[in-house]
Image 1: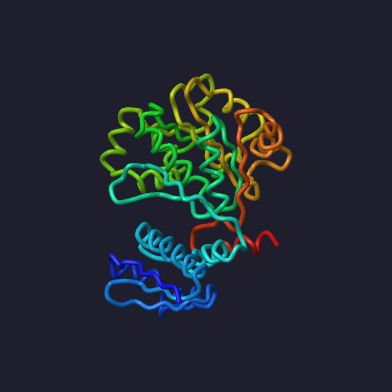
Image 2: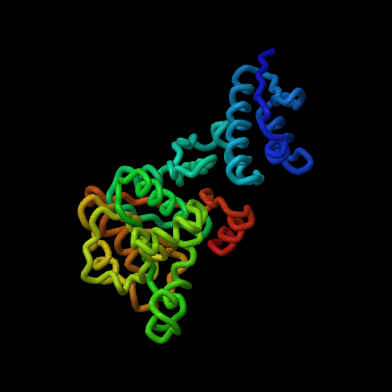
Length: 309
């Protein structure tokens, strides 16, 4: 009977791959019909040839996840098993080259893979999807990759200041103090990929710029990677203004969750309008992510499903 072995580099990663009380291991054995043991610093897989191949792919993918995240969730195991058994199409694991030693970022779902590929292929990409599906994180990762490979000269992070229900001018502090709460999610994503000192230096040099959408008027952004987050809270006029800031050798990624629009009911969301209006415009990519693309805690997907239903 065919058999293969996978070297175990790190015993802690092996524990993460097998799961609490070997829960992940038992699921893989049952779903793929293979025998799996761990001894002599290796995972040994035995079964039918095709099943062994599928199980090997699953364990290698789980090992990458454990290396990157330090843990493996039941939801991640479910997705890999769905691909292995043919229930969903396979995901291309083209890494995002953020050039951080010892770390590689890869899309975790077919939707995320399509999103990353759209950013590579188009100058403007619009993306909608629920909380936790990686809209902001993957856009920031691609921006860092483009900056570090010198395909752009700066990163511009933009958000509409709608959530608080008040004008920026009435908030305390200077401009930076006013906009920090709005741009915190984008900064959190950046700090996942850059050392604090590097990020501070790039911010001081204006290579990484963070501004509210209202301050974009009149600018032209050349050689820049521009991200508009929470774009569901733009008006149609604001979205047109933002899109026309695109300069030479630049990219724009516009993302938002159309189920969380905070605009007054009489105003149409600029993101909803742009997804329809730019449908057939060459150079513009559109991606719609769903609950299956959520990569936060598995409970987040169940919460999103509960609200949708």
